[in-house]
Length: 457
Ligand SMILES: Nc1ncnc2c1ncn2[C@@H]1O[C@H](COP(=O)(O)OP(=O)(O)O)[C@@H](O)[C@H]1O
Ligand SMILES: [Mg+2]
Picture (cartoon, rainbow, N blue to C red):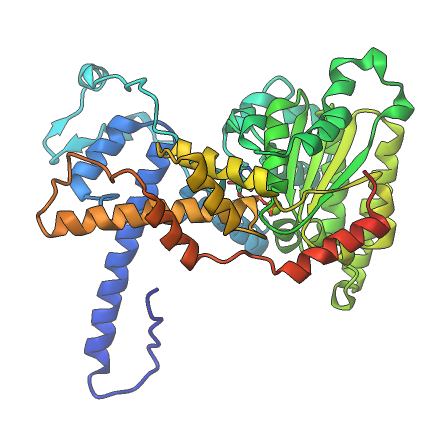
């Protein structure tokens, strides 16, 4: 990480150092921007433009954008910052007058004509190499989500206030697009939980005649250690279920709508009813509804009580369902807990499941291990979550990349020709030495005990 420079620091050559620092910072920013653009192009299958960008700037050859950031997130954050500060959305684009519309020219000489633009090689439809770690880099509010709601545009809400509509627009951005591409097959060894979720969300819609109103579940809480696949399950369900899925990430919800979150809950449920059948997916609900004392101030209390009222409201209608997840079920208000008729533990994977998760990620990366090897990895990963195992596989992959880079630097390999080699048992054993499970053995017991008291499966 870059060290933050304080312009107030005094030393004899302060101004020189400061100038140097600004220059470095500017270069770093430029490099980051180029990488973010490259990632955006690749994520949107604009491969030929990405290739040109890479050839001209070397972006993506030596660095890659971290998992938890992309241009979409940067823009969203900026918009929400701007909204908080000025109570309106920032204007990003302005329409050009006809005489201002100049095509981009290469080298400031040759304008790209329409014919030339059309002669650019069409996008190769070739399969993009599947990125097994893609779940983390997808945000849920891509523009695709709009296509789903085109048939029912928000202008139907014309009788509502502009404030209401603005909030509704923010919520619509949180609709999980069906094109996210996560399926049940990506949720390894979570069959039982998925089946319960389908029973609540999918079957009543597919076989309405079989489900009397009283029989359908209205609220399900998935709890369990971090990284066991709760969010993953919900996203898979969002892609597979025939209903609209609205994702509410609790922490974002609270920080964005501080003071207004109570109003936002109302709008959230209104929008869900409008786009019903719909599922409101509240990830990490503990952040919203914890019992801890410091969250007990007035706004938070009003917010919680609005949430309870709204959940009670949907109990009477059959079209909206609430799915929530938490890593700390004991932190949830009893009153709220009662609204979740099903409280299901998403457990740490057992031996069999760990073997299958290893296999899943190795296969995605084109590695093949014998059953004996897998059995050894499984033995060394007691208490590992699915996410921990994924991190191990990622570390293996990274070690192979590092090795290849080293060879390229020493001139022993051609950077354009071959990719990293196949993984061997030793690579996995080395990775296992570096990665520890996110949860200690004793802590897991806490979930089991909580489940014995409050679980409802
Ligand atoms: N059972 C599983 N099968 C496949 N991948 C898993 C599984 N559990 C976790 N993962 C991986 O770990 C990542 C993080 O899991 P996540 O669903 O965010 O955990 P949680 O929400 O329970 O904290 C997932 O995106 C996925 O890549
Ligand atoms: Mg999660």
